[in-house]
Image 1 (spheres, one colour):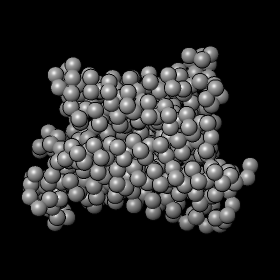
Image 2 (cartoon, rainbow, N blue to C red; image 1 turned 90 degrees about the vertical axis):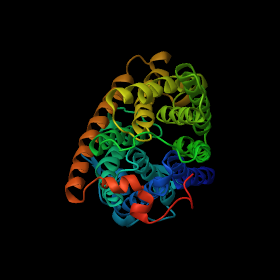
Image 3 (cartoon, helix red, strand yellow; image 1 turned 90 degrees about the horizontal axis):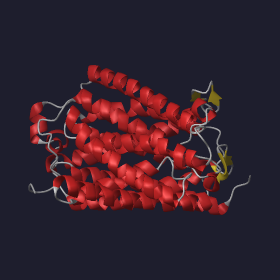
Image 4 (cartoon, rainbow, N blue to C red; image 1 turned 180 degrees about the horizontal axis):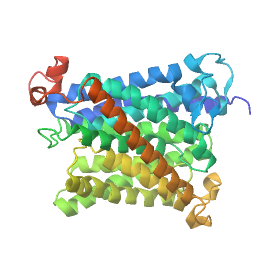
Length: 407
């Protein structure tokens, strides 16, 4: 296959859209949900994680994820510092794309995955500790898992499917966020007091917009699969938001904007692994199930076990990513991508690989995150002191205020 101009135009556009999801969409979304006194710190946690991960991607991350396979576990080091790459040549993993473009596109996925975790740790984690955690987690969790599924590793050999990151992105970050939140402990003021719901609305819209590149771009070309993935992503998003709002209305007697925004993100996260394999009807069903299951995780599960996952990274992204990866095995339609799910004559053939992928990626993420947090806590300490938490991390750590007066 030779380089295709239209494909490169679409993937370059998709790269910009995924970049937008972190800078500024996720930062705005998380910042709006944070108390005013720690808003800037939250936004900086997203941006610094993006920067650190991107730098590591250029140095060795791309090579570990997409280098030549070593025993199914990790990529080789032939692309260390991106050496020996001719910008005019195609990428080995996508021969229709320029190599640099494929590296750039995948870099944005790595960076936003690490940044997603920050939402579970806001208002109580040392900024320096977060920087070390981000670097170690990208190296020892994201890069290997990306290789296992997308880079020719053992899970791809087993037939595990993950179109745009339900396992690689959402399960890894969601479960790791839960582990980190439990180890950090609850905040002194654990009630969420969003600094600005209009900011959350803007962040939601920008994330939704960027998701066209996240899911549509994962087709790695301008083709029917890209169009279908983008379409079902939109369906799952608005259905997820609507159903979440209705559930909240029934349970709490009021439909809130925060519930609507959260449901949209839950729909987006849940459709992600299946988006390139399912049709419009499945997008509708997955959106409904995303709202129901993630709503339960955020409202009931979190209350029962009292963990302080500040912005519900586990409940929305972790649970949604796992759910979507499993639903793929039921709803994959051969007319979309030549994969037969249970409801289209495939039997249980795809379910077993999906369950194995969920279990292995989940266990690995939990164990490695536990080790990383323990090591960083020993080295520099994870949590700010109580005075800094009470004062707010913006002034205590950065010497700044988001607003000239508290609002």
